[in-house]
Length: 268
Ligand SMILES: [Zn+2]
Image (cartoon, rainbow, N blue to C red; front, side):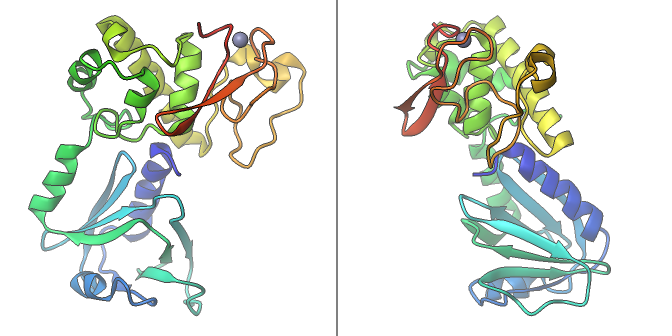
């Protein structure tokens, strides 16, 4: 599933392509036909990302809400419009570009109260300048759940996905089983700052890199990581490979229904 940095990149891209002008909106597949009719021909005022949720704000207080989920994907191009290929839930056509959306978990038009409700159920998004990490801390401090699960809880930290949750715990040298109750305010601040820096870099690069300078392929004279998720990381999907810091094989195990990766030596 795309992590928050991907959604923030999409929000920026869609703003560049479509904001400030009327947009033709349709649903070639038909499943979003009534929603598209509410937006069609309206001016797109702005876009924003909140965690893994993408919002397109149209004039007249109508907001398109998209959550890509596991399979959702946008494609774009310049006119002429191609014939729809596959199940195109939503198609947008602006002055210079078209955009197709396939396979999202959510694609719906929201009125302002529903937008507020959505914001209200999301936690602090490290990529948003208005995010307040102090708001998340009481939820963490009062929970006996493992920190790994708390980082993935979108009502606590919005936008953090599996890769960032695994990597930020490694970088902090923390056991993923550390309960929220054991996290001091200073530790939380440090985790948040690291997560924010990593995610900002993810937005800039369009991929997730989490290794420090001394652990890059160049610095270690090693081959770059080959993985369809790309990026140089310490533990994510590196099962049984040697830890880049200590050489211990990276471990994998299920936790909170997700794949947890960790170094048993560096994170104990
Ligand atoms: Zn290690």
